[in-house]
Length: 342
Ligand code: SF4
Image 1 (spheres, rainbow, N blue to C red):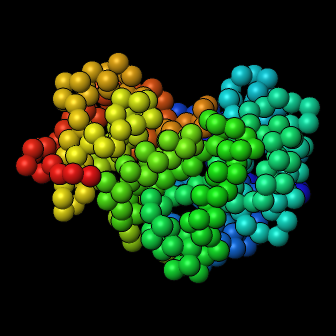
Image 2 (image 1 turned 90 degrees about the vertical axis):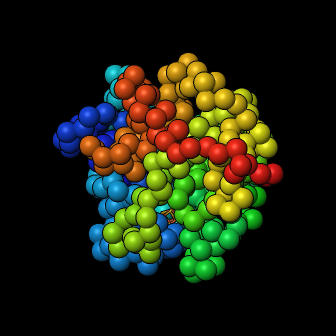
């Protein structure tokens, strides 16, 4: 395996290229190099088989230039020694020899270094997970992306001629839990793929109860993908999902404490007063609006343009950011009459 892709921000962090950034990444993001991209067909992904982007250097809205693996590896080790990097994350791509290459990359990096390494991958068998665990990989991520079986089929599975199945992803997450242990397995969900807030929060609760760490992304349309014309979620909806995630995963509330609009499924009540929510947001310094997923990963501008609406804050929020997030959360009136059973 000679080459690897690295996110433009990570390449800048390692001094491989220069890029002006407001916030530097805290994690080096690697992407397996494949000239043809990925043989899967996820509807939101520029690496997908049917994405019409010719150049496979894009993932989400970020470019991933190619570099020789040996020079990247050397720079990663230097970055850890300097203390400018907290984690390495390898994103896999379905292509020939991707499993062998994934194992090689992890082993090559970890054989004489203790570096917290995550692998964001598609389902593999238990034996492969055990190999990764024994090499010293710290965490495994298997992204569900969709918040229901039906949406999964449309964006990753059968309905879009993709190879993935909802049940196989869930089984792989459970198997990863057995191999890596609680708190070391992550899944990501994308807000804005046609789900209701009720559906989304219910799944967040289920995932949390299974001891799987939960990361959120806002759907980001990318040119050339099947979902290029699909709209982003509103920032109001995204802030609600961030708050719901925080309340559920920190044990403040369960989904059954929330109330939802009967028709739209939108959250209409939190089971606590606005004053209490504001207190939680202030006391946590707005942590719920920061990037979520593995510890030590901030993914700056992965799904937000610099200068545009920041869906996942890559750095601690300012007082002004916190005030603005609270205003957004409560922009729409909550009517008691909208409440209903879940
Ligand atoms: S498996 Fe990953 S890289 Fe491949 S198309 Fe799906 S999201 Fe993109």
